[in-house]
Figure 1: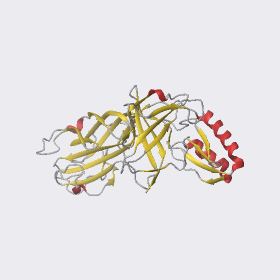
Figure 2: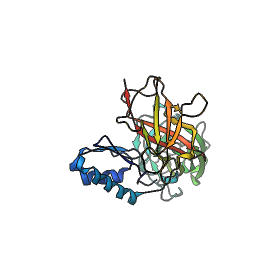
Figure 3: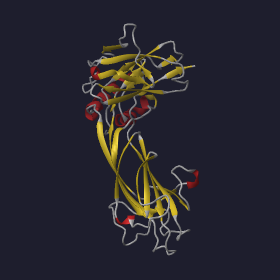
Figure 4: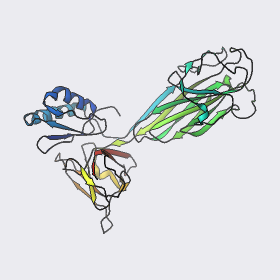
Length: 363
């Protein structure tokens, strides 16, 4: 999702406290415009609300200014599909070389180093705009023997990314194994065992994959077969292109213990924690599937009649219906010092969502 306003909720509480659930662009602009009249700089965190402490005579001005910015930056609340294409270059890290095969994450690989653009054999095919890379420009050390190098590329996605898939197109001299988040997805040539001396570097191979997680780690173990002791006669290298397709969940605005600040509670298994999920013009809280909602690992509490402890009401008086759900706390879910908690769930159509709220856990 592009940065912008995540909701149109603004609440004034306790005289000098204003909660604003808006993202970084408005947060930064408000602080620049009004910082002489702000007691404390807001925490401008994407996907989280922040708190302003203002001189009382400037409250109305800041609220009015924020409302104008919201109109400018407003966006439709929806899950988003995204994609990236990654190419081999010097941002890749490389481990080794080793004189024997080792699996990924084996301590024998030692420390990582930045890859360099390597000497390119005239017969190696191109994969524009990717680059052939290795640990050195010319192969060094055990040039005539079998050697192994491991290459790693880490890609960050959005928080709680899902439906992750893509294709890795790779080529190496002489053979490679390919992994995504530690899971083997394929190989070409003989990386382990007796070398087959195939000319696998003549063509690139596609490796389709699926994955989970907010971060993807792509690992390649490349073997250079034993051969000539002349660097230009027995070179090694890797080239790849990776497509990453994924979806980002809907981000919603929540308030833990609405109406109170700070949002403190005793986490001893003897109470209920209310959380408001704010609706807006583009987000209907009636679409929330209560059976999927979790505050960290806590499910929505149940009444004796088997119904969820949930109510639909306009908490922030913005004319949009909000959803207030309650969670039975459990000892150990939260710890003193925790500052934020995450609520997750799905809409009835299967769209995942999440929200982050501030908390204060009493010892």
